Image (cartoon, rainbow, N blue to C red; front, side, top):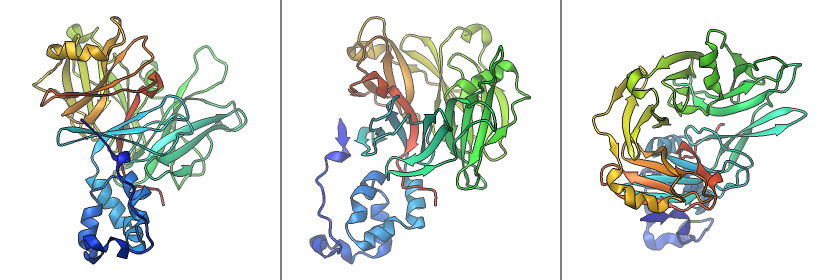
Length: 384
């Protein structure tokens, strides 16, 4: 069952709170009003609640409210267009129920990884290179960063981008992987970084110590967790990790038995706090591995994800016999997993499976371009 937050009745906006006196809400002390409003979703607060009266406006815009709201906000899944022009959809799971809301923000370009509610957009200019833009889709506030190109050289070809926060300094850093356009037999993959609101130009992260095989992972879409950014290949056991605080890259390995898992399909998913890995044993069956935050130690969870008994129910979302069911992200880890069928069909239903109750929900999306997903918090966070 779905709850569409955009379908709520539009409230009456007034400059004063006296029009809602029948609820006696204006008589509530600021502390109690604070704890009531902080439980509402960020897009509802920004689009509606803050416009009720000046008191609500100043309360919702205070640093204390924004930071407390962020702590109350659970990780969900942001479904985005792979192309420009779409409205991203935010999906959460509350008390076992799937909730969806479509942001009123219309993407200017592809949305990349998100952290604390801040996502990335990139646009390309032949003259000036790549323009990188930080956006909070709930508040529609944008922050332009310096364009990215080589100093005095050819414009770089961007591979992926993301934003993450350094754990100690609490600075937001934007990371961009690129492939240079210098003519050579093998183009070079590299990494550039910029501290939002501090740096006027991009800095380069040292990658010389990485092997050619490890550096090739920089072409993958980054997985963002608290304080770290990771690059992992779909069917590889090694992955790269960037410590956002120290800006140092390291290579790690998932301790999977090589003989058994060599050909198994692997799906790395961010949980928000850390990484998880789903290893396909057969159709509709995955082993679940989890990485411990900070130490990057991997352990296999006891329970596998078994959907064989749900095969008939799940295949109603398939567009044909040749389509394969794959996991795309956690709506709520480790309770609700989002999946979709990959194949030739232009429709793209997103399926949500509750591992505890075995319930299945879905969203019918109109185009396969809507299938890109990132872990996201619906927050009021912004860069001052």
